[in-house]
Length: 286
Image (tube, rainbow, N blue to C red; front, side, top):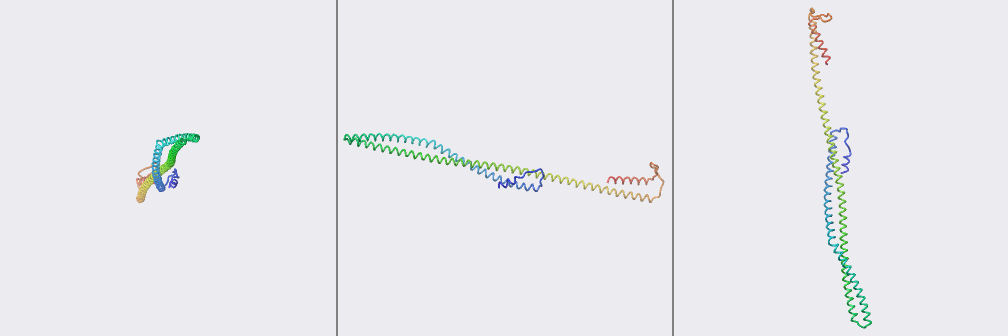
């Protein structure tokens, strides 16, 4: 789903205005991609929170185990081991001394004929051997405790490795969540750009509709004015024709007015000339 969303985000707006229908389709696709990216980002954030909680719990367990191991077991094991080593050395020295005394006593008893002293020396040697065996048992117990400490340290190392792995997963989840947030922000920005382009296209369409309405109104006004002019022209033409007919039917009369140039005209002719000038004026206005 992430790849499909990125493919949808690849195109960039150009300066060329888009059609409203195309903008609406691309806006719907980007809305869907934005919702998908936001869902993935929320899922990644939830997984990130779970990983953080797990990492914190592992860190607390690791710190507690390390503190217990350092404060309790380490000192006790070292003390017991050192004590066992000192006891073993002391018992070994005692055994060597008793063996030396036993050998000397045995040699002296054989030479002097006093077996009682040899028997006492043998008993002392047996007691020394028993003490040496007890010291060896204590040393074995100390070694076992040391092995237990090593196993505990190994377990702590395993928990530490798990904590480190959880930390790596946490960092990977954080990086993924960051990418998801960036993708969601890019989708939101792209959606906002498309919405702005859609609104601009709608504004241009409304402006074009207004211009078209204004042109239609002007055309209608021109047609009305033309109709009025044509009606006035027809009326003047009828008047001129009627005046001409009346002038033709009337008997000639004496001129009543002299125009510049010595032309004698009657009142009827002056009226006809005025009508002709009005017709020419209206014709020039058309």
